[in-house]
Amino acid sequence: MPRNSGQREGSPFTGLAPVFMKEFSDHLSSARMMVLMLFVIVFGAFPVASSLQELRNITEADAYLFLRIFTSAPESLPISFVFALNFIIPIMAIGLGFDSVNSEFNHRTLSRVLSQPIYRDALLLGKFLGALATLAVALTALWLIVFGAGLLLLGIPPRGVEVARAASFLLVTIAYGGVWLAVAMLFSVIFRSTATSALCALGLWLFFFFLWPMIASAITTGFAPSQFRTADEVLAVEQVGSVLARLSPGTLFGEAVIGLLNPETKAFGYFANMLLSQSRGLIPGAPLPFDQSLLLIWPQITGLIAGMIVVFAAAYIVFQREEVRA
Amino acid sequence: MSDNVIEARGLLKLYGATRAVDAIDLDICRGEIFGLLGPNGAGKTTTILMILGLTEISGGAVNVLGFNPVRQPLEVKRRVGYLPDSVGFYDHLTARQNLRYTARLLAIPRKDAEKRIADALESVQLADVGDHRVATFSRGMRQRLGIAEIVMKKAEVAILDEPTSGLDPHATHELLEMIRGLKKVGVAVLLSSHLLDRVQSVCDRVALFNNGKIALMGTVVELANKVLGAGHPILVEAQGSDIAGTLRGIEGVQQVVDAGEGAWRVIADRDVRAAVALRVVSSGGSLTRLADLQPSLEEVYTRYFQEARHAA
Ligand SMILES: Nc1ncnc2c1ncn2[C@@H]1O[C@H](COP(=O)(O)OP(=O)(O)OP(=O)(O)O)[C@@H](O)[C@H]1O
Ligand SMILES: [Mg+2]
Image 1 (tube, each protein chain N blue to C red):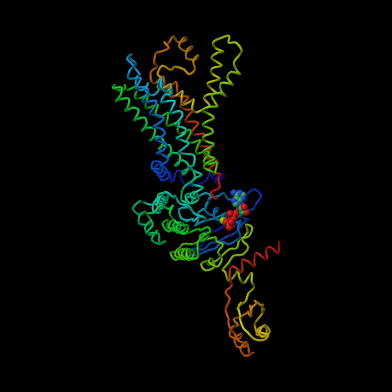
Image 2 (image 1 turned 135 degrees about the horizontal axis):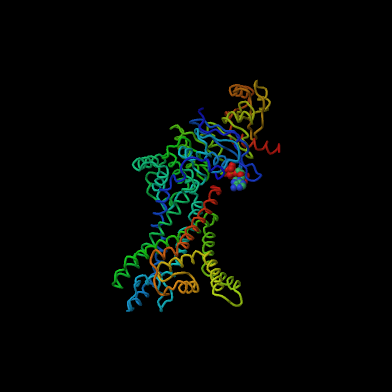
């Protein structure tokens, strides 16, 4: 098919809607979804509950108090909600996507479905969008719960700009989930065994989560001269470190979220922040307007979306070449 | 357009250096049941997948109902029903839900679909278990559900890959009846199978595959004549002295083979049963059995592949 795909007739999206609907309803009604939701609530609720406890006792005025629910790490449990998400979202996405194509193959439904008037494009995209929609529903539900809890317990309504920032945060989390979903689907296309594909996806996640930060800093240390002479040198080394770290989707997500939820963020990296404040004469603690924050994290957002598209495209190419029979 | 629903010319499939399907020509006519036979790995499934546009074609051309499965796969798949070997359904859904999903993929309007699904389940005798989860279905029921999908689709051509493999004799019989039912409503059926005597009973024509090539093609009688030689085979069981000699003396008899235990296979150029009865009895023998032997596909198959192996 790939060789002739240029001249084939009919829309590649024929049948997309039924596939999407089926995947979406299958996921929502599956036991797996229940488990994942439970997982999310347990891991998400604790940081939020304890940070709410602390925020209630804060008396000094904070213009962005509401957003602190997401970012503050309580003393009792040094994990913020955002950090917990950084950790849980990949697991959710992998849980939804690791068997999406190979299970069809193993249950021998693939050749029957592909003998209906539908291109492989629509099947793969429908599965991806179905799982992404499921993820979006779960994350939105979680977001609403946190938001509602904040309203009840803090007793002050968030300002418009806080709502806007929090909503953008939700979109970024969904995009982050999309990246890991695409990764999980890629493995589900490559490996016929669902266990292998789950292992590979989880392995990659572990690598990025635990190993990559260490590797990145080791490489950065290697670049650093024995003695820094100018501030530019310090900055340059820090830049190398950031670039390396940003190869991990988790870093992109983390930076984008910090930029959105901590309006004081003006640059990423300690020295970069300091230098920027000095050179422009900005006060370190002063918040950026929303549009400036968006501009700041725009590269991170495009990075996440581009990563998602690239990985999905890879899955698509592998899938096109796959034999449908056992 | 001719009355062929499937036309393949020089159809070729290469897997690396192996020629899984080696430049075959194939015509399937409207409303006939056509059998693809051959040993494991002969290329039957590969041929079927190429006809459906589910695998790339390395060379040659196929035409299905006037459409090219490479460039117009959607048009082909809209009109052709396919039952893969060991077909699978979504276990967590009911039979009806499974068919509903297919109906949506086929863009059948919802109102229409419910009726078509009910009729299709009825026609394969699954109406009473239509709301059971497919996980509880036996192999035969899944196979029938696969036929129901084709019925619901109102396919013009049905392609069934080993539809009877793994079924018990009763289930096989039922399934073949359903395949005949498809033919009755004008569907052309292309099926592959190893159960030769069963295939023989439903197929109008067959093609014998060997090593990716079509070795023989035609009706069962034509193949028998080609492989086993022309003539009427009959089986004679009799007691008496020199029965074989008596049989050889009958006009038209070409060959008498001792089949053991007082039985002989006689091949003649015409129906010699009356003469055999007369001569055996008048020579003092007692005739216990006289049977007309239908050429059996099994025999054709076995003989052909024996000869092919000898030649190799
Ligand atoms: N993906 C593949 N890669 C390489 N060779 C393959 C592949 N698929 C099939 N073949 C080869 O193609 C040939 C034909 O296989 P095919 O499945 O069409 O046979 P078949 O007649 O359907 O056999 P069976 O009766 O066992 O189903 C076989 O020799 C097989 O080894
Ligand atoms: Mg086969």
